[in-house]
Amino acid sequence: RVRQIQEKLEEFIQALNKEK
Image (cartoon, rainbow, N blue to C red; front, side, top):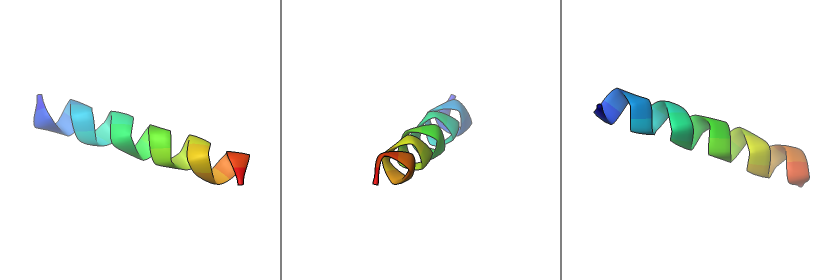
């Protein structure tokens, strides 16, 4: 379960970087 959260976090970070 923790790994799933980390994967979602990475996706969120990537999305934020794309917005920048």
